[in-house]
Length: 491
Ligand code: BG6
Image 1: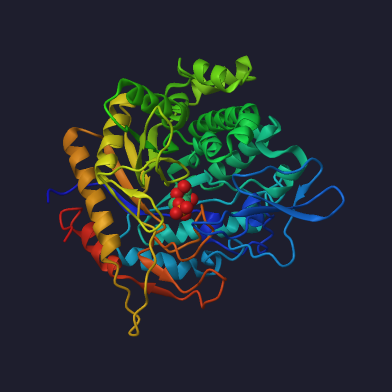
Image 2: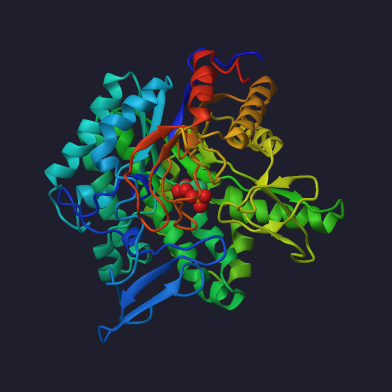
């Protein structure tokens, strides 16, 4: 196959809460991810808390909220998979050497905010936290790997969530930008590519996963929280450009490809509305610097009155991103008449597509959807694009000789790389690809370990047992050849 552009950034992606572990080491404070239990494909993850009387409680991730007066808390007897994750905190040297063995050009990772500011409201950062990421970035650079750093991958410091209600409060904007300024300044010269918020649009996608009454009750709060994050993102972009004009800062969107279920105009319009609400709402603000015209309809329908100041609008206008990045896993069908047979996906739901096959976790496998998304982004914004998450979550078997044969993962990745090649031929300015979960890590949606994406297998199970030893899967050598041939050899 025709190769990719000569400076194409091939690599893999991770997030700190799913990878790092060491939740109580190096002066790190707890985050909201530290109070999430493990679930499965059929049972939800729970957030745990203590109520106003100190009694333990929990509610399902998309099926409840924190009772008045309660505080999120780590409870005895509960299992929290993100506490140790896969212990990158102690394995980072070995892990980076293994990634370098595949010829990685780029490694996407996130900084855990509460490693830098343990409570989130301090004025001085935690030197041990700063030092940890400095060592990681230096290690990457020593192997010729470019870090791509997400500033926020869902890890709000628990103290801020418990004391000011997290992003409900405008104060979060200042806390976040103080953190952002600190790390942007500290890692100048080590990091060039930054993403502000991971999958910012999933703030509103989550509403679709809730029971309708709960979603209606949460709408005002959710859109206001998202507004605060959008302003924080825009201020961060401005700060980044002031600190170092060579910094490249991107948005990161969970790209939901929504096909109309039929050619009925009502289905086409339903898919368009879902695209606007779920897929484009955040990117339109982050790229164009203002809310799109259709936002008014969305707020009206959801009964939302957004509180936005003139300064907010000015910040949004000034803080537009340099490139667009997104995650892509699957697509769904949308029909005006409601959902007949529901499909799952990356925090999205829609209808099953009879033309596609599905993963073990019920996510559609649709490489053409990636080409579709790349073209849509290119024609909508005309910005350079990077695919920063893509992959197949699947169970792997370790053979008696220690080998791991994963032709299903290779087939998935191959077809999506072919789709990217087609998008390049379509004229899309695609400059990089980071396969999700390049080292097996904790699943975000289910908290499972057995939902694996990696080129590197980690010996750990759903109950937290295992040695944490790393092993190469068959896809490790396959991806090494892909990178060595710059995408020409996909066999
Ligand atoms: C995206 C997230 O939602 O998809 C990742 O940015 C997540 O954090 C990935 O892990 C895959 O989802 P899951 O639920 O299979 O881990």
